Length: 608
Image (cartoon, rainbow, N blue to C red):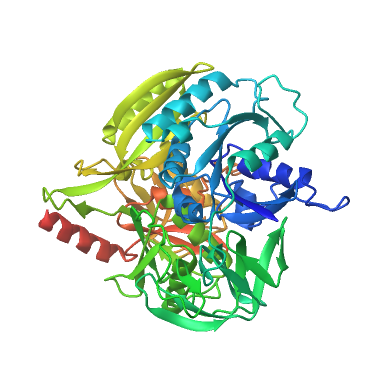
């Protein structure tokens, strides 16, 4: 059977996973009465809850006796490592672009990587049924984007489709019949070349996706780059430097059929396959026949730009809510993550019982932390820090910058420009984007965006949309103002009371409700002023045998401000930590003892 390998790439929320659902349905991959969940490819719990794709996944459909292997990719910039990795497995790319939003930053990132690998793109302008669709303008935007990314003449002559993934149709003409997705299937078969690989050479493939199966152990997915593989054939695993990691046998060969993986006896060059039977192989090792000496070339992945400290939970409530609480368990879990997620790096921290975890952004590391807490881990997380580098030619310190594209209602554009300039952002472009909205483009240090998103949503009354993309390293921009408000810090251990919290409401915004456990050094609210304030949130009303002259007024508490994990991580300052357990997210000071905090402050003032 002929084979085509394609990736579907796009910015977040432009409809990749929904389109894959329809491709699977219309190709007959499902049985007539089979129940399939919406966004079937988002099989991870976190993906379903957040409505985003986090992990790249493979599926396969058959159209006109040709097997089309499809890889659904994440759309968020933080998971760009997943996209970079899988581009080596495909020969073509379907670039999906929203008909109203146009080409956004992540579209630029993934398209740039695809064009650099020489892939032939098919452009699909999706969501044509939107009321604010502007397909002709978006077509011009995409052409300009391809030209700016250095596309060759063949890539610039890209075929284009107009589609609605949700309604399940695609057409070459904007006013076409809009029946089904057969024009897309036919275009993929015509435009994407079949893999031109040597089937007679000794077997070799690169591990691109790693999973752990309860029955099969380590399962490694990749494209067979040369030769043929058979069940139980002997293989060896080569690292990038040519060293042999292990030898073994391929106990299982699994080929993709719709949403399922089916055991097969043999696969040949060009097909995407999952193999089992190896215990040490990882990404991006080469799995090859014993006679192969040289490893296959692996795609280099962009380095991390952000780092966080993962620590043992040493607070008073540590060990009460989780099952995995020791630093050894945390260490083992983090290093296991680096095997399957090559965009994350883990190193020992100078701090005792702590580890430095570097990644692409707050969301990527936030997903890792959320996954760990659901697995029963307890840990404390430090404030995100950007990773600096030194320019070898000039000797200057450089820091990561990001390109930020903001769509905001016109009345709020002024406050956004003001806040971005305070954070060292430089405006590159400002243009109307339809519907009384303005599109602003900035280049800004990554440091300036840490903790800004919540403030941005407040300033724009929740209507603003911010998209960001790593731009590169540039000279250090100087100091950037952090959070202006101080913290309300608990001065006592115990359970909070309505009586006590009622009197604290006027001091600022509370993060806790009545009846919650607090401890000395825990942050229970945001102070309305710049300084930190120690407060007693557990004080109870004294009862006497004297009868009151009138009834006590009923005490009403304003609902507390609850933060998500990412919001909490972005909120804290350098002297604060986020305590993460399976059942709670708490904010606390790094040093719980007030005397220790004052001593550290004096040392810091003396050093300055």
